[in-house]
Length: 456
Image 1 (cartoon, rainbow, N blue to C red):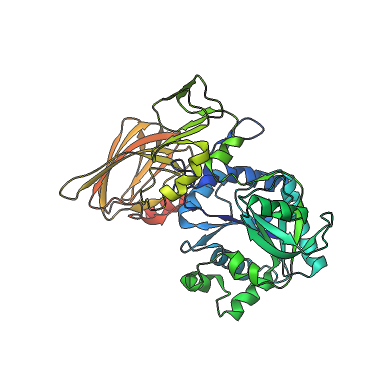
Image 2 (cartoon, rainbow, N blue to C red):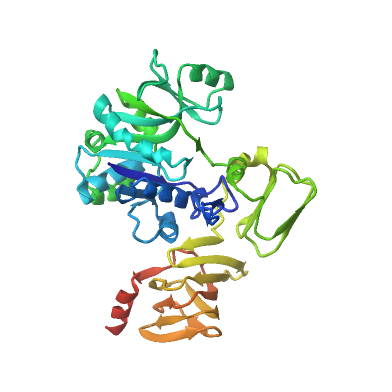
C-alpha cells in the first residue's frame, strides 16, 4: 500500500503567519510529547512513522512548498512536484503516473490519498491500513475513510450510507454525499449512521490509470508533467468520486479535527502567548502568536486572536477569524518570511525609488552544515554582511572562509554559494530593477558537486 499526502493551500486562512510558501501545515504552533514546537506536517509525518507507513509515503505539492517540506521533514522525503497549482484531481493524477511509471508500482497496488494536515489520533493511521483490506473484500472502485461524528457540525461534508446501515459494520456502502448541511439536516443524517468526510480516498492504481487512458491523458510521469495544463482544474471528488459506481466507507471512531481557521487551531495550542508580549486583565480564550521582535500587549480582550509576522498583523475576535480568507483572497503580497532546506530568511525592509530601482533587505539564517545552492542572478546585485557565525564561500570559482564581520559584494552574474560551519546570520541587501525570488539561476545544490564545479 502506498500513501500520497497532498500538501496544498494558498496560505490565506491563517494569514499573516501563513503565506504562499508557508501554508497552515507548516506553522510550528503545536507541541509534541517532549514539549517541543512542531507543525501539523511534522506531527502527521511522526504519526505515519510510528504507524510503520513512512517508507511507503510520498508528498504531492507545488514548487513553492518543496523547500519548506525538506526543511521540516528532511531532504530524503519523496516529493512529487506539480508543474503548476491546479486542484486535487490533477495532483492525484500526477501522483498516480509517478507511482506507475517512475516507481514501477503494480497496477493492483492500493493507493491511499489524504491531506497532509489532519489533526488526529495516531490510531487514525493504523486504521488507514485497513483500507486495502476493505477494497479487496468489497470489490469497490473507491474506499473512503469516514469519521463518526461527535456533534451535528455544519462545517464538514458528510458521507451518507445506503439505507439499512446500522453503524457497526466493518465498512458501509456509500449512497451519497452532502457538503456542509444545516444543523437539522446533519442531525437527521447522523441518525442514519452518516460519517464526516475527512478527504481520505483509497483505490487500486489501475482504477485511476484506466480513467486517464479513457480521457486521453498521459500515464507516463514526464509526459503528464508536460501536459499538466490539459487536466481539468477540478477536485478529485468532482472528477472521480461523484462518477464512481461502487464506493464504500470505513468508519473511524476517534478524534479528528480540521484545524483550518484561527478559532479551531487555537483550540489545540497549549499556551495563550507565543513570542514577545503581555496579556493582562480578562483575556480568557485569547491567543497571541507573535513572530516579530517587538512586544504586543493586550488588556482586557477576551476571545481574540492576535497574530503578527513580517507579512502583517491580524487582530480579530475568534468567531470572525474565518473571514480572513475572503479578505485576503486578492492579495498578491510577496512572502516576507520563508523556510528553506538550508535555513530561513525574513524580509526586513523594501523600498522602490521613483527611477524604478528597488532595494530589499533580508536577514538570512543558514543552519550548521547546510549550504545555499550554487547560483547567480540576472537582475540584481547583492551585498552580504556576516553578522554571526563561520562558514566557507564560493564566489566565481574562488573558495575562501568567511566569518562574523566580513562584507561580501556579489554583482549580478556572479556565481556564488555559501556553507555554514556554525549557524550563520547574514544581512543581505539586494539592489536592482526587479527583485523577485524567481531571479535565481541554480547550477548545483550538493556542496561536493559545487566544489567539483569550482575546480574545473
